[in-house]
Image 1 (cartoon, chains in turn purple, red):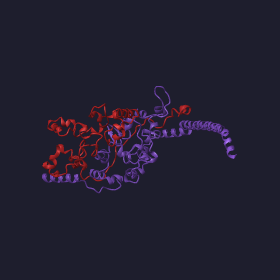
Image 2: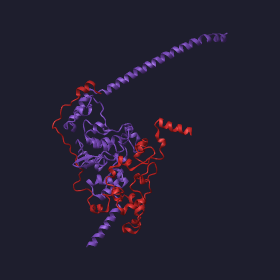
Image 3: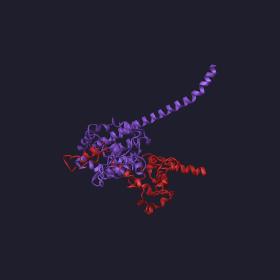
Length: 285
Length: 191
């Protein structure tokens, strides 16, 4: 009897259950959709809020700009943030805007590893693509002028060291701050621009180059890397004797330590030149 | 065949050109190895002009330059190694022996073998692969590594009496900053 009762209940209950499940499913999916719309609206609003500049942010930017070389050189907001033809506001100016004044910097940047992907119309370089060790927190940063330069404060002392260390995480980079070279700039860090005695990352990797009567900064970050004697010629010899420079730069351990101590190797090439000198001078005597 | 064609067209369609790479791309070039057209025009061979698009500055003072090999004294040495063609030493997508050079490190011996075999007493019995791996000679630019340069600069102190980099000066037009000119516009419509 019980069995029958159970059986007799079942056929009646199944359609009812089905209906309930259908209604439940309908409601829950509606609920999910509404929830998604609400969340989405919230995010869009947040995004818009984050995108739209606030008065306090503007004030901060204005202050940075007022104490910058850009302000004194009459490079005003409109120079970069306004389309010349249409007078439309340009929220995020690109490298093209920088190029209108800093042609050499942008063009040399595009030839190094930092800029080559942009030159070849690919997505900009990110530390995630690099072969050298990079900081995890920086993996997705995209390489453009803004990545290293705060274009409002125009403080190239920051661009020349701190910016590099935002991404670079290899031993040579990490050893810079406690190295003899790194020690020099510590006393000069309030300058808006590294002076002629400061040795920053940029000093060696984006060397200053005399072109005619101006001193330009070669932004091709690959240029002085190989062969190593190119860096000696372009950079080291400004401050060091050639023997010290070659004996140091051809020693991988010293390079990794960021030139923390004097070289220990004596390259044979100098012995040869010295022998040659001796021979010549004994001939003339 | 059909499968192969489908595979290739699929690769083009989803922009995965890396499957066409014949081998490992060298350090540096690897960053844009998917952009075939950067160096290749169809199936034509890569020319010096292609390399010069980016490497003009490195070759501005090329020591093994066209100028030198127009001289009949040296011209025929090009038959040993065509040093005026970039790809003679710098092939791509093959094994490199450092500095993007795919030839064995004794490549200088193609013309300079005499140097280690009696022509130059100081270099007698030097290893044939040591010219550039030893850090002594730079094929393209030996201005700061030539014997003459080293002789002139021997015995300099480790740090020069007046160490200084070229100084950057920025000429400014104003003494005090002007008013910022787009503040209103930024507040109204700015992002």
